[in-house]
Amino acid sequence: MPPPGHRVRQFFHGMAIPLHLLRALWADPVARRQYLRVGVTQALAVLLLSIPLLPSRKKDHEPTERRRYSLSFGDAGEDDAEQEPERQRFHQEMERKAAELKAKVREASGGVQATTGERARAVAEAVKELAEVAKAEARERQALVEATKREQEQEQERGPIDRLLGRIDQEVQFWVTVFGIMQLVQWVVIALSRDYHDSISREASLRTALEPEDGPLTPRVRLDVPWMRKKVSRRIRAFVVFIVGMPVLYGLTAAFPIRHELMAVLVPAWSAYWLVVFTTARSAYAWKDAAPRAPWFLRGWRWLTTRVPGFRWGFLQRYGDFWTRRTREVFSPAAETEKQPWAFAGLTVVGMLSMLPLAKCFLRPLIPVAAGHLLVARQQAESTTAPKHLEPSAQAPTASSTAA
Image 1 (cartoon, rainbow, N blue to C red):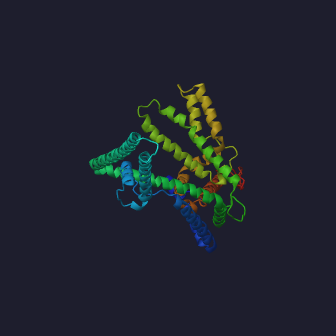
Image 2: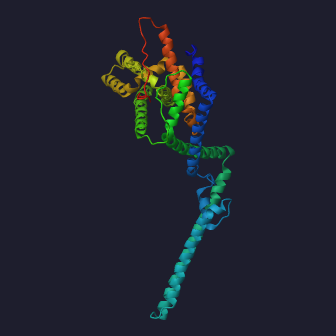
Image 3: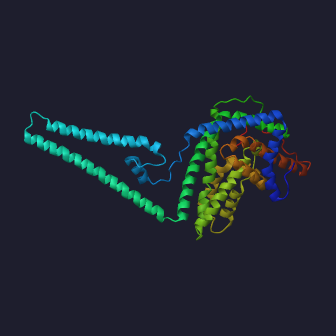
């Protein structure tokens, strides 16, 4: 069905399409079993492979010097079993040093060729060295005790808000690490089993009257090197099209006293725009336009550098040409996004959920089909309102499309 006319309704329409696709798959027992089997298996694989790599959370908040004191001098704690190997190594090292010094004393006192005075001097030197080692150990222990006391005093001086903020910071660091590990493992799992997602996408397309982008296939676990190279090249392309716009943002905000505040708004907005574009580009239907027009920001830059006094500089126009060349590959999905920005923004919100670990195993095969439905519905709506002498293109995408 064509998208609604109101912008807010278009936004929620884009969000709802993946749910409709899931409902269509759920209605058929065979498709439902396949969807659940693939998603649950991938999620379990991600969990089982991630758990051994996750960091430990035991006593992450304990000060470093206090941990050293506890490890070195046997201060009992709630993680005593974890500290025991370190404590044993420390005592073994101290025993080894003491044994070496005692051996020197025995050797000096029992020498046959040395005179009585020489033996006495050797024994005195060994005893002196042993005393120096004992004093050094005592000084180190006293320093660690004082450092522990200072940390305890500083901890007590901190207010409840500071302690809470510190705890929150530790929690954020821990969960960011967990997120990164699970994302990496999830990427590997999906890279090896992506054929099953393609099969689910094809099934969802067939059950919702959308021509599939891929032909029939027998899914299997495999390492698809060409697909991996394509994914890497797309990531590089996404980085390039994002980064070439950053000098313009810096230049346009340079004259304002609130430059940092403006950049704090413009950079996330620039990132969000490209996120919507690349969500659109996940469907091969977004790449059908053979001669798309330049995106809105390039049109605005061309107008600014050719019409507005003070900006009609040659180097600015040349940068616009460079910007155009770096972005030309994604003109087609960018043009499709401009025609339905609100609907694709809503779909992007659901697509962002697929960035979460485990959620991607269930949402990834639905997003390209949802984007295809939005594109086809708009094309059909335009064809019904177009003049009869203009025949709209009906070329269906193929599996070899350069969809992002």
